[in-house]
Image (cartoon, rainbow over all chains, first blue to last red):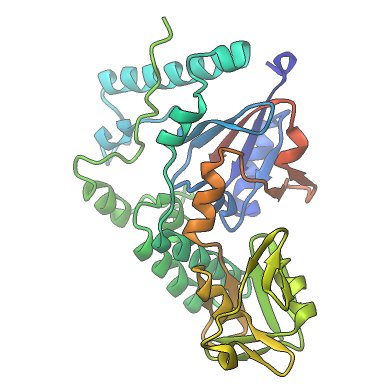
Length: 212
Length: 137
C-alpha cells in the first residue's frame, strides 16, 4: 500500500496512558497520534470512533468523516456473555470487508475510484457543526484541561455540559464516563444510552457504493 | 495567572485581567494567546478583520486592553471558563468550522505520538491519507 503513496494516520481520541498498550501491541509502521482533548473531533465534526476521513494528495477531503468499517452488531450482543449470533457476526464481517475493499480500491485507483467522491458529493455528505456543538467542544476542552490540573469535580461538570450540548457525541460521553475493568465505558448507563437510540444508529453506515 | 486555551495553543499570562465573564488582554497577550492581532480596524488575522462593536466601545476596550471574551462572543464563537475565571477556552464557532470544512480542504492539525514527536497533516501532502480515529474506551 505504501508504494501507492498511501498512509494511514491513526489518531487516538484518548489519553496517552490508556492508548499506549494498544499502540505498543500494534507496533504499526504508520503514525499513531494522541489527541487528549479530541481536537480532531472538533475540527472535523466527528462524534465516535472508529470514524475516518479520506484525504487526497492535494489535501482535499474525498470522503468526509464516516464510520470506518464498524456497524451496530454489538447491539445484538448477549449482555452477559458478550457473544453475538452467527448471522450478526457474518453481517459484521461483510460490512468491514466492504469498507476496507473500498479503501483498497481508492489506494489503487485514486480519484478514478468510485469511492472517492467529487466535490459536490463530498460537500453533500459533510455534516456541519451547529453552535451547541461548537460550545460543547469548548467545554470538553476545558474539562479535559481541568482534569489534568486535578480539578475533578469542575472537570466532570464541564464534560457533562459538553455531552448535554452535544448528545450525538459518543466520544465525549465515553471519554468522560466511568470505565469497567477492561477500560470500557460499557456499564448500565452506556446500554441505557444505546437503547435510547431506538431506530437511530450508533455507527451510521458508511454507504459504500457497489463498485462492480 | 490566567491560562488561555485556543485551538492547540495553551498560553499562560501573568498579566491578564479576568473579571467574571470579562477577559482583558493587551496587544501582545492577544497575539500570543490567539494568533489574532488587535489593530485600529479591529481584531485581525490574515486578510480578515472583525471590527470592534462601536455601540459598546467602552465595554470592549479600556486602558490599552481589549475584552477578548466579549469580542470573541461578538464574532459568534464560544467562550467558556472555570469558576475562578483562571482557565479560559476561546473556542471556534460553528460558522468558522463549517466554512473551513465546506472548502473540502482537510483542516490542518499537529498532534504528538507517544514519544512526544509532533506530526502535522500538511507534512503528508502528496500522499493519500486515511485519517482514522480510535480509542481504548
